[in-house]
Image 1 (tube, rainbow, N blue to C red):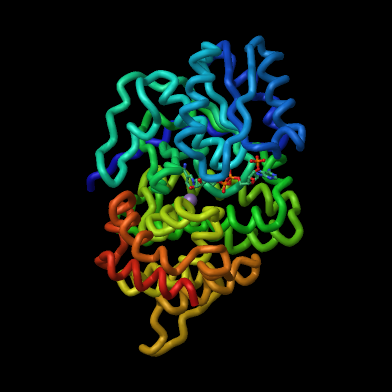
Image 2 (cartoon, rainbow, N blue to C red):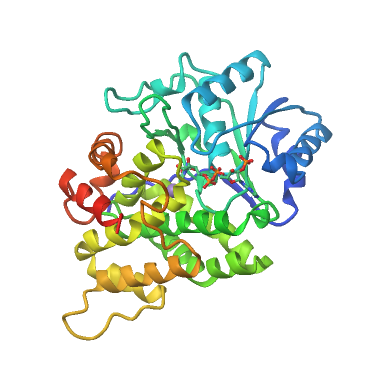
Length: 389
Ligand code: NDP
Ligand code: MN
């Protein structure tokens, strides 16, 4: 056995615990920059609550607003300038995965020379090493999905090349993540569904990855069971229990992602939301069924297990391939949460397929190679095509 296990995030979970932000941050810095999205956190009152909590604990706190969905290099670089100029010594990410990832990029670039693009792997270069420790990071997630609260990744889009790789470093773990389900409880239905499918994809991809990890495995099963039981309820009723369970599933999916790193569904989705204005979870929803049909034959027992978690019993006899049962289970889940979508439905153009496949191989090749069957560029082209039907 050869195992590493390193997920050093202090996770603070519970309703109302946003109020503890100041106390949590006080030992970490004196001048906080709160990185957030375009308006939901301000509108819902959570931004003011965060700033007040920080100030009540004696910190100087300022907001940096406007993170776009699928955060861009220029937004992160601008944030790093703001952090330097304001002599900020602590970065708080408050919002969806996009705000949390932008916060991570800003923490790196506030302390290291050059723009954030230098620090990711892109089609034409390897990442530059991060020389100086990033500013300490704390998060308060407002969606239940990306798991960014417990991963060492920040997904950043280059608006010129449309590549969307991840910045990866153990230095990107948040010192603490306050998961207060009051925040994601305010998500509208479609966002609840899309982010919940993101959590499912993390758990499912790690569970079936060739880079499997014993701790991740347990987290994956628990996260998939939570999605099967609570996602449709969170979308339809938004009751407290369903919301709490999904927020916790997101953190578990993220911790598992930190250990296993995902595989080809994410590898194929990043080029989609890099080139088109697509919500990450909706891109995953469009790709999941065809991906499962492609790689499920490489992991029949796991596919059968996931099918059962989703309430789909593989039929007896040789004809019913477990991958097919698993794909049916996922399609039924997508149907229940209103995300039975094709790539066409979410605005992707067929003419882009060759480019998407190339980007997936070049910037996300590592995740593609973790699929349980050997997967090349031609397979990706076929799966993108199938995902238009
Ligand atoms: P976003 O952070 O992009 O937010 C999507 C939208 O939801 C925004 O318009 C935002 O509004 C709004 N919103 C957020 N929270 C609430 C709320 N509580 N109530 C109402 N509206 C809300 O969505 P995701 O969380 O799905 O993050 C997606 C990003 O995360 C992608 O870039 C994806 O690639 C990345 N990701 C990162 C991972 C990691 O390990 N780091 C793993 C998986 C995905 P506003 O802007 O006004 O706040
Ligand atoms: Mn994801």
